[in-house]
Image 1 (cartoon, rainbow, N blue to C red):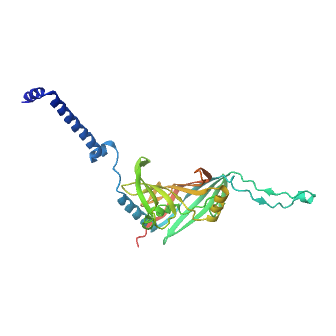
Image 2 (image 1 turned 30 degrees about the horizontal axis):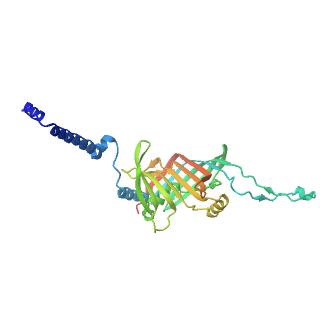
Image 3 (image 1 turned 180 degrees about the vertical axis):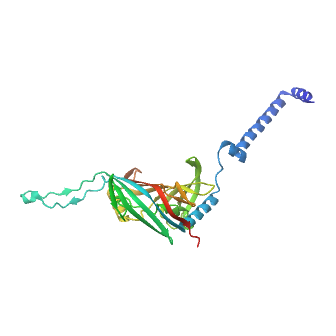
Length: 311
């Protein structure tokens, strides 16, 4: 029976055989494309389908709710390195204690301050306590620019940028209240330490309340909605007058960018491992002058309390 079919096919006209060949080729293409876009093909190619954005955002809001109701008590080492270039700040005159030229019958001279590049390194013992939805940060300075210190209960000593509550960064974008002020979109996939993550971008919703973050991006595990990294630009929460003065002096619009990584996890809460802040001023041509950069690393965590208050 098989040989008869082969003989019958062989006797068909050339155009019929070509048509059959095209149909077989088309079937093969359908099978190939089907394997790419079917669930089995996803596993074969290693490309995960785009996550359901609504589900990811709901899980992120749930996480922020747990974070905001958490009870925490932990200590760690906080390493801070700041670099600043105040060269475009206008020099201010310094009043000399003695104007020797004037005393000797000469003309009055004005001495101007010299703005040098700044680089400082601080090492703190950092403690964070959060209870009743109130967070308290305390620092003991143990090293300043390589020299040992032992100064308890000191403020953050950076000269250009002040920051606080890095732990609560995700709340700025993904809490129930914050999400109302943004439009979100899926912007692709990446990997963090070989872990597939979804990249979610946020921008202010037209006509909504003006949020603190002017734009944002987050790297989220789509399976667990764990927020592994966030980056956003924002308006300054503190020292607004100082930044306004710098905008006028430098002739550029402030672009304040922050990035936080969360690599340490305890009882379902992720703690910051790195914080990066860039203070830049963008002129009318779109060129940015970076006035300061602050890098913070959190290491050697010791946890006393990490709980979620479900009241």
